[in-house]
Amino acid sequence: MCRESSKASALLSTGFEKRSRGELTPAVAVSSATSLSSLGIGAPYTMALVSADSRIAELLTELHQLIKQTQEERSRSEHNLVNIQKTHERMQTENKISPYYRTKLRGLYTTAKADAEAECNILRKALDKIAEIKSLLEERRIAAKIAGLYNDSEPPRKTMRRGVLMTLLQQSAMTLPLWIGKPGDKPPPLCGAIPASGDYVAKPGDKVAARVKAVDGDEQWILAEVVSYSHATNKYEVDDIDEEGKERHTLSRRRIIPLPQWKANPETDPEALFQKEQLVLALYPQTTCFYRALIHTPPQRPCPRQCQPTCRALASPEWSGPDVSCSLTSHLH
Image 1 (cartoon, rainbow, N blue to C red):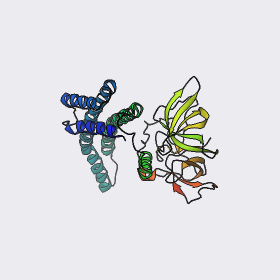
Image 2 (image 1 turned 120 degrees about the vertical axis):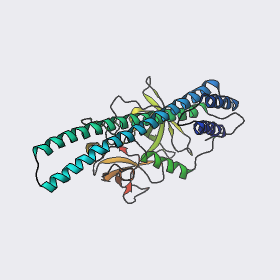
Image 3 (image 1 turned 180 degrees about the vertical axis):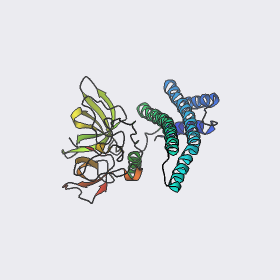
């Protein structure tokens, strides 16, 4: 990140720290706008940053309220769950299921089901807020990248160290949202192993696998970020995610594979998982290049550290290692 971008981020972070109970006061917003302008950042972009900052603060406040509602709903339903447990214990003690207990349990379970659905609806609203916050942060990051937040007198941003980049990529894979559908819903495209639809166009900022020509003339799949898409030429402009290369490529759609945007839950949507022996592209360890691999072990549980498959590399002159955890895995065309 360049020096001016760092200053801007620090100012916006200060704005978040100064809010009370998740609220961003107008005084802080004005202060942020004034300070950003003093850095030489254009007015339209400055106001866009402050607008995004204010909206994120509002969403955080709403998210906080939803979390409180979840706790209140859970506490309210706790008494009913205790009654269900006690009723079962009495039935076991008496060793019979009388009409009275049958009627009582029916009513208790009906109430418990309604309570669970109410809590589920609140949690879904909270997930929507989180998704919107992440979207706003991503839009702001892309806007900053396009604007090039540094003065002519300042040097361009320094190249990110390889170790830092690898850590960020691993975190990105680990924090990919888990698809949680309603009963009967099918996982959408780009959830786990489900590919994008034929007419899908990746958005700016989306991570993709891109097939490019290497320096030696050979072609390879690399991790890239979408810059733009031209409907006139049906071609993408993508940036190599590895800043050491700092290359921009113009590629046709057939050379681009959109990466998954949700993880699939092995317990509820096993059909959306990459299956054993399925051919995929997976990242070489500690690189941003993909290799051909076969799924060795699909994930078994939805928790972050157990939701990634392990892959076995096919014959490769560069690397033939043991089974590894496959982050950012995609279909191989």
